[in-house]
Image (cartoon, rainbow, N blue to C red; front, side, top):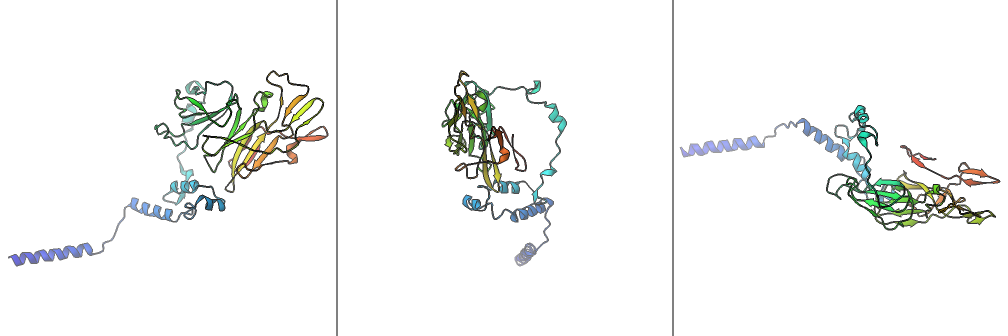
Length: 336
């Protein structure tokens, strides 16, 4: 009896081994097939050879310093097609947008956020692009906001969504220095630029050029922009003071993987604070106005002296005064 038992057990064991060792046809599920296809698309990514390059290697190839765009392309890839398809997103319900009305309406009233401890106008306000939301642990991105006052100083608020959050002034810019415009490097979100001086105030808000921060706005340093045009000159009734006293606007645009900076330098007659400065009239930077450009992060500059950017005055000409820059979606730069 025992021999028969062991014989049956041995036969069953051998049968089990043969069953489990015999190859069987694999039938993956639909989701498994999609995953396999997606994994292959990622393995064949067109950015496979560039996304892991160092900053120096990317710079030599004319690429941005980090692989954000390449990584975003892969992360937003349509897993069934192997490339992003933003045009396949759901249509926007325009009626729901219209129902929200415009900012300032009764249902969308403005709420003061300051800074309310200094006077004057605020012409510069922007979110910190490096703020990922962890500064207040509320999982909301972009709480930190910078604001520049014409009355003076660059200010920071760590949580603009909290009406009780206080503003602090940023060191490196004088508290009475007019901050008029800003730009952020498209290839380095830690690099900010601000321009100083407001030319429409007859000298009440004189600036002293361009400032740059390379650490997300924590500290600032002046940027030296050598003036183009004549130096200080005078006539019986006028004193033409040379320098860069007003920057009306700044734009930083990406061109072939590099950053081009443009600043619009303005001019004004100085007659403040009592509007009685005269004999001679003090005219600030009239020969030095115009569009200045840098292609090396602000180390060197040149002014565009195209005849189209000159206007006749008497027997000579003066550079036009840029008031506003706008950058088109295709990278075209417009100046008003």
